[in-house]
Length: 263
Ligand SMILES: [Mg+2]
Image (cartoon, rainbow, N blue to C red; front, side):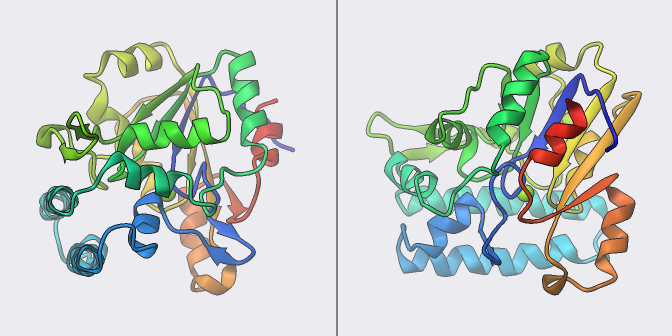
């Protein structure tokens, strides 16, 4: 088994730290659980799906330039936040998504965290989730996982005194096109963490996740990707993924191989 000694780990959240597939069922992201479970009303579900159809198509379409995609993704996130606000999202609904039985962290992630802590290796959790950084921390709390050496970078949702969602700072929206470490170096907790770091372990579950380290000059980056089962993808996809990642794990894998890698 190959070994890699990281001094920093950067990981995506949905489908990377959380289980992506359980018994061949693909587990949706936190926000999709909110939608699929009808935690908000049907009108919300329909409009969220319409936004997904409109902007998701642009995201995948190579005819759009990077700038056009950037603007489209920003608009998608803004419009969806507006919709969540209009529909009366509260902390209660977010809790219902967080505590939904389908939201599971991968097996042995706790052990992985323990080793990181022992070795004093910080973990940056990166997510463009609409439910924001506190929801991600709540998933850690749901499984009694320590956040001691963990920094969560995600959207920062604001609530009023009744825990009703009132919006986000629009200039701080984290969407799929600015989910890059270089865009967040202005945050002191991030700048301090990455100072003097050389070897980074990157964990992701999409073809975009390796871009989290774009334009960063670390000495060595080792990328591990959780890949969907063969039958859910086109056979040629594995080759495309293999170019983006150093190690591909099956989508339902636990953290034991990653733990062995860094032990
Ligand atoms: Mg993901």
